Structure formats: structure tokens, C-alpha cells
Image (cartoon, rainbow, N blue to C red):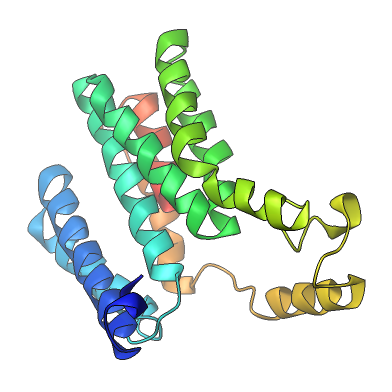
Length: 212
């Protein structure tokens, strides 16, 4: 959207702003639930891992930002019990799902975690309504343009448009080529939810969700 009002360099500045918002969120979340030192460590790790994204115009930082704040809102909902927070989490997840297809993978992960702590039909109806109203626009546009809501990946089921089977196979190869594993220095963090401390199962589940 910034290209409509500013030069191409503005998209890079937007990405840098997203990184700043992520840093602010990490510091605030860590201060509230852990310590200032934890916030500093989280910020340094994030800046190191995102160092190749901050000065680009890729959408991955935006996806990470909305996913993180959705997690933050879910934790606040767990702490306070206020439905508003889980609605905010659903809104942010819906935007993440509309940014990039990988955002869709967040939906079942969050759903399983939240289902473990809340099965109120009214709450889930609100969540579903928010997801449908906010998160389906891109997929509806895809369907109207190509007949494939997840174009081009749905080609084998919905038919090809612009891309053929060879193009899709090449794209899958690129995705596999850049698939990485959890950095070794983050592996110990997976044990954090299980450290000996008084913590409810729901809190442990949300912490695992955050690490995921």
C-alpha cells in the first residue's frame, strides 16, 4: 500500500517499522511475565534471526508480527478471562492468514491450544465470525480470479491458472530448498514450559504455542 503514496524505498521503511513494533512487543511481554533481562535477550535473538529481513520488503516480518501479537492477546485472555482479548487474537490471526499461506498453519495450532482451555460455544462463534469476516478476503479474491482459493497450490484440485504443473513443482522445490530447522541455540527454550515452577497446564500449553 505504501507504493501508492511513496517511492519503493518506503516499503523497506515499513518493514523496519514492523521490526521496531516486534521489539516493543517482545520487551513489553517479557517485562510483564518474566523480566527486563528476558526482554533484552529475546530482542537480541529476534534481531539476529530477522537481520536479513529488516531492510527488505518481504512479508515475513508482517506475518511474524501479527502472529506474535495474536499470541500475546491469547495469553492476556488466559490471564484475565476477558473475551475481548481472544477476539483480538482471532482478528490478528485472520490478518496473518491473509498475508501469506503459511499464516493458515497458525489457525489449527491456536485452535487446539485455545480449545484446551475454553469450549464455550459463544466464544467460538465469535472467533469463527471474526476469522470469516477478516481472513477470507484474499482467498475469495483468488477464487474469483482463478477458481483456486489457494492459487497456485490448489492447481491439482481446482485446475491451473497462469501456472502449470511444472511451475508449481518448481515452486515447491524452492520452498523445500529454503526450509530450515530450529537454530541450535533456541533448542533449550523448548524445555522452558516444563521447568519446575507452579504453572497451570493451560499456561504451559500457551508457552509451547509461543515457542512453536
